[in-house]
Every structure is written in structure tokens, then in C-alpha cells.
Length: 263
Image 1 (cartoon, rainbow, N blue to C red):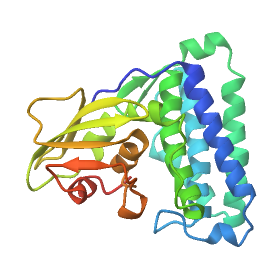
Image 2 (image 1 turned 45 degrees about the vertical axis):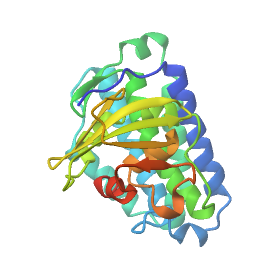
Image 3 (image 1 turned 60 degrees about the horizontal axis):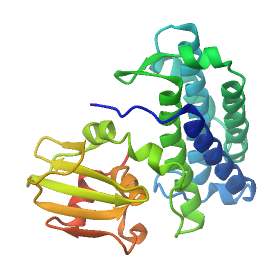
Image 4 (image 1 turned 30 degrees about the vertical axis):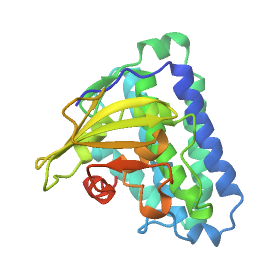
């Protein structure tokens, strides 16, 4: 599974800060009762999404430590106590404490020296990451789950604009990991706007694969905004949240949705 090189550190860091601010503004406007309401994820309340992002901030703090110390990446043994601690929190605590956890992680990143940023390396999820690469992974998680919260309150909400170019250029590993087999193979020429990108999406009986650039062998086409394509791949492009600008030919949109049920 190939990964595109991450964009400059400042771009990724700025987008992550903006996503954290978006989440904070949303959660601080809600009452303790409101955070127990449903998120976009049918199985999680808004507070549970907040708790997931809070535990994620702590887990990525462990990744940060490992990269600074040049040790192996932490695993489930180290993650489990973090997950247990956040799952044990009351809903109001989850919604409040995620803001503290986000700020603490942000503060640690901001406090790094230029040399520490440049030297940071860690083998994560099958590939070596720079600090910008690690933050890009955190941004994808943070931006998508923040949308899960925001869209539950505003059905017309979209992914944060500044996160989309960063996330969309690193979705190939997600496609290969999370894409499900399709009964009838299809090769889709995908073109997105905002940002403009072109991909070849292969859906097969074994799974899915995404490569940059188109192909003359495509048997179907998909034209849509970049943020909608990201949400499709993350299982978040249901009919009620599909822009009217989406155009698809040669394959049913439900077939594409079925190949990416969500992560």
C-alpha cells in the first residue's frame, strides 16, 4: 500500500489545529444532555465520538514519544489502558476532556524544536512516517470524526475544506485496507474538484485498489467534490449526505457505497 509524501509540516499542522478548533467550538456550545444525542455514527453518541478522539489524542501522544525516543511504535498493550480510561468517563467528561487532550497534544507539537521535528521518524502501520506524516494520519481521524459530530447538528455540513487536499492524497492505503470485494469487477475513472484530482479505482472480487491518474481501461466514471470522495471511501456518503453535483456512470453509486462500508 503506497502512501503519498505528506505536504509541508506547517500545512498539516495548521489543518489539524483548525479541526481541533472546529470540534471545540461545536462541543462547547452543547449542554451535557445534548452530547448524549446521536452522532452520524449510529452506534455512537456525540460524547462517544468525543471520547474516541480524546483517546486518539493520547494514543498519538504515545506515537510522538516513540518517534522522539527512536523506539518501536506502541501497540495494543499500551493503547488498551488509554481506551479503558476514556470509555469509563461520563458523557459530559468525554465531551469536555477531549478539548483538554487535543490542547495537550497540540502543545507538545508546538514545543518541539526544529531539530526534533526534522529528526522525528517512526514505523507506523507498515511504513516509516515523518512528523508531518504522523500528523496527517491524526488529521484524517480528527477531521472525519469531527464531521460525525458537526453533521449530526447541521445536515448540510461538509468536511473542513483545508483538510481535504491533505487527506485525499493519502487514501490509497485506506482503499486497499478497507475496500470490500465486489461481485462484478469494475474500473472507475474518478475525477474530483476542490481539489482537482484524478484516480483509477479498481473494485474486484478480492477487494479494492486506488491509483493516481486515470486509465483508458475504465468501464465507469465518477465525478464529485473531493470532500465527497473522501467521505465515500470512509463510508460516509449515504443518500442523505450526497451532493447533487455527484455524477456516476457505468456503476451504481450504491455499489461504490457497498465497497466502502466505513471505518
